[in-house]
Image 1 (cartoon, rainbow, N blue to C red):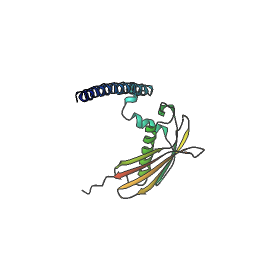
Image 2: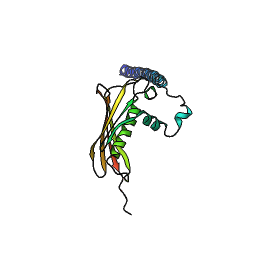
Image 3: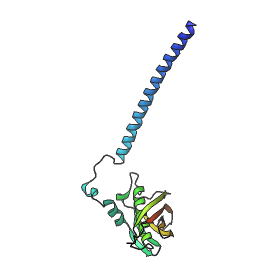
Image 4: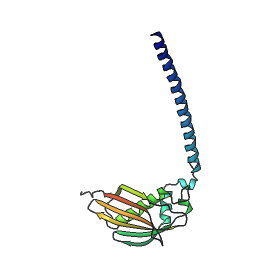
Length: 185
């Protein structure tokens, strides 16, 4: 019996040593992963200070509005176009996803405004984006916003981004706006 307890004791100390080695490997692996992720973010421009002009309130909205050129406005529909500029690309040289979503929201809100009276305040309640392909610098995109459904308090708009000329669909969005009720005082 004495030899059995010695074996058992020896086996448990061996497992403690293996467990501590395993934890060291996991810690080392995590440190390498953290270092890689930090380097990746630095490559994308993280941790850099933006120029003072880029820190002004409304800079991003102004930049997106400056990109858009209106082609058609009619009840329930807006068509506009833009050319992808280096200013709105990501580290891979393609149209930045956040800017795509911002432009989609802007077009969707303008489209909703073609059918919702100006005395009703609208707010974005839900938006979904599909990034089907990437758009490189200098690609011309046509943006088509259409009312899907408009009721008393809810308006839904679809927005499609297509490459001009080829009509290739690259991004789609669907936005739902809610109207605040008009007070009856």
